Image (cartoon, rainbow, N blue to C red; front, side, top):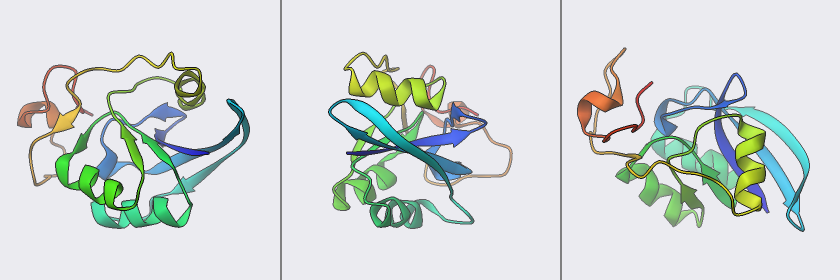
Length: 131
């Protein structure tokens, strides 16, 4: 199984569409056996789903994410787990151990992004994907 976690400075990045990169963990029998960092480059939401599909990712863990991105990931057969925060490796391990704690309101409801905005101002809910 491959798990990708939105990542900046080894912490879960709080907005999928703006993540600078992903920590990708490969796991077997519930244990992480390898990890690597991949850059998102200048990719947009749809291209990020394609990037993760090319990496053969099974699960995406993120802070916040919008409906369009969720749909693109579902079409690539990638399970989306939103509402995570903390160290990316600890989050991946918690997911594998079924102990991952998540915020409930993690979906972004806005459709555009201005430089410097916070998603919390656009309907992500309390503790949503503000960054």
